Structure formats: C-alpha cells, structure tokens
Amino acid sequence: MTTKQPTIREAIRYSEAYKLSVVRDVEANGLAFGEATRKYGIKGLGTVPRWVRRYGNGTRGKILRVEHPNEINQLKQLQQRVRLLERTVGNLHVKLALESSYTEIACERAGIADVAEFKKKVGGMPGIAR
Image (tube, rainbow, N blue to C red; front, side, top):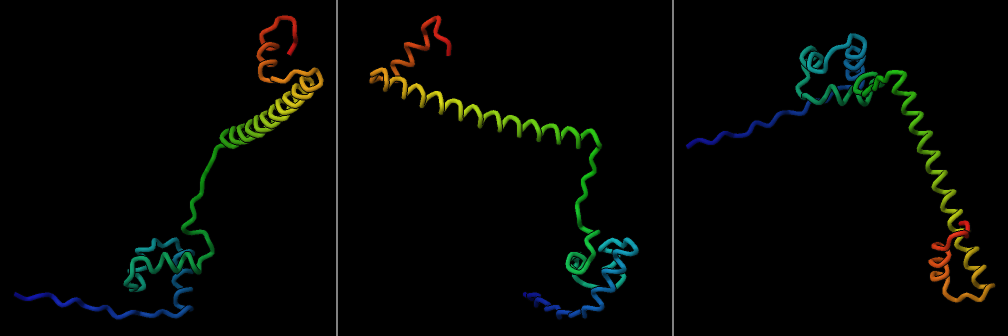
C-alpha cells in the first residue's frame, strides 16, 4: 500500500510595486479577480481580492444600494414619524408622572391614606373630570 506524500507549496512573495501594478490594472481595466489571477500567474485565489481591498481606491468590493426617490422620501417620512412617536411617548410619561405626584400630594393634604383606593373610587365616579 502506497501513501501519497503531501506536497508542500513554496510561498511566493510579491513586491509592493508588483501588487500595486496588479491592483491598478484590475481597477483601470475592470478585470475580474480570476482574470487577473490567470493573467499574472498568481496562485492563490484570494490573493488579488485581498490586494484590491488593501491597496485599491475603494471602487471594487463595495456594495452600492440604489434607491428610487420615493423610497428615500418614504424612509425620511418613517424616520420623522418614529421621532414624533418617541417624543409623544416621552411627553406622556412626564404627564403620567406629574399626575401621579399631584394625586399623592392631594391625598396627603386631604388626609387620605390609601391613594390606590382613592384612584379607584374617583375613576368610576361620574361628573369628576380626569
């Protein structure tokens, strides 16, 4: 029985100038990464994309999202609506806290010990505005 001996590939080092020339060619001519790899005889599949990310001008590898004007307007409207609702909720919390404090102070001054029971009674009585 024969076993295959693993072959060890020798690491190839490229100069910075060589890397920059490959990246310039990819960006200027719109070469695909695979085409550049074959054209320049580079062995690693991820080598050229890594060089482009590191040395490129940022035009390759970026994801661009194209939106229609009505989508942008809708997004802005929804963001404004969220801000308005957040502001409204904050105002309601403040009003609730003030009402609760005023009720406790009024009960204390009127000599009512059980504030929760007072709120239940007042809440169901007709003619008392809330």
